[in-house]
Length: 165
Image 1 (tube, rainbow, N blue to C red):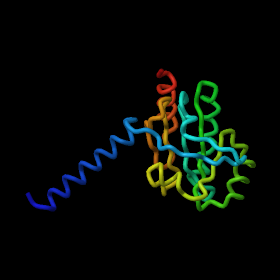
Image 2: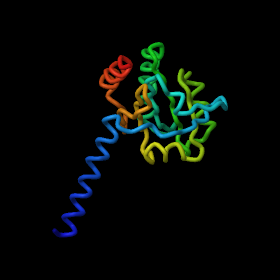
Image 3: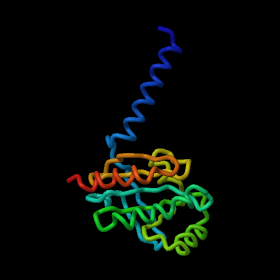
């Protein structure tokens, strides 16, 4: 077989593998420590037993700002049922902007700042915002959204995951 053909087959296999990896919940969420705006820390280990949405965003991202009311509503709708949200501001976002945004919008969920970029790197080298991960009660990534999610579909998936034991 020709080397270019083998390379194409290998690339296709990797692409399919990555797609399955991100959409079938076959991988554990990376072990991460999130530094929250109040100075406390949250780790992925604290996700156990909850369905958790991890949203990478930036104050300079128009789509991120536009989706925040829907993220807030989603959190409000499911929080009492075992759902949690962590909004992770990107390393290039000035901390004062993040604090101002969180306070002025009264974000009801926890907000972390990824000062070093290590969290974004651990979660698949996130560079595009918003990028959102949905993690099941067992700490497995079930879905990744790049760009704003379809919130009706997201809600159906959250409800399904909350119903699982």
